[in-house]
Length: 167
Image (cartoon, rainbow, N blue to C red; front, side, top):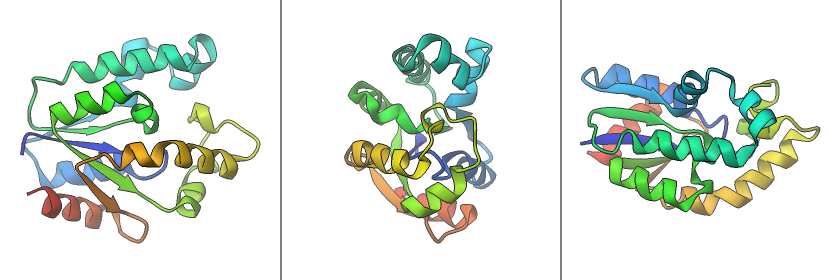
């Protein structure tokens, strides 16, 4: 097992599940691409979107991903929109095993409805926006090496299921 890359919708639990995986794989390191971007840019993602736009952010995201091409023992939690660029998914598949963290839309909505840190969800009708993002991205997420439905699982159960699936 080289690396584990978690992809999925905002609120699907990628970061939380990544932390659970880390507790089960102590020789691994957890990389949260959004956190790494914030550190690198020295500003929040919402600021990047507001000041530079989504294209600028996606360029940074692609460059950030490339940094991990020759590294091992990583659990990488990606941003929800990482699949917006086909190139990103191709790079991620070279880095390791991609896992689509699937979650039903109602659960996603409940998790993100109060979260103001997600620039694409700073809209009046969050549920409608989530549905739109899901429709646009779901097919791309399904190109992952495996899919884990996390809707009715705890983060710990998800982590265990992922390890069972990819071993």
